[in-house]
Amino acid sequence: MLEEQLEQQVKTDALADAPDHVKLAVDLIFLLENNKVDIDVALLAIELVKSDLQQKAIQK
Image (tube, rainbow, N blue to C red; front, side):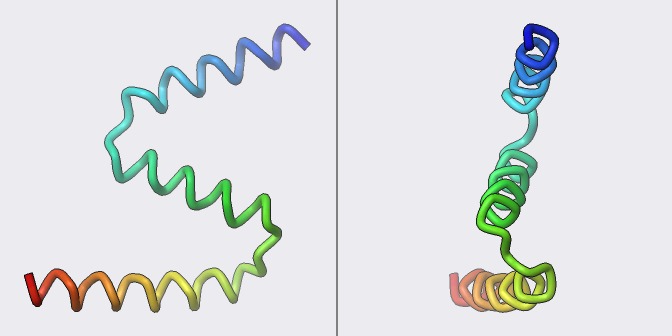
């Protein structure tokens, strides 16, 4: 149990120093996995989100 806690702390520390886009990606992966979202559904949703964000970036 202690070994698992130490391993988790190391991962948390490494993530704290990661760029924001990496932190967001890790959060999104965690959310999708914990909610058992089907991979194909997740990929389709990500395509929609990407398209929406790209449109918003153009309008900026």
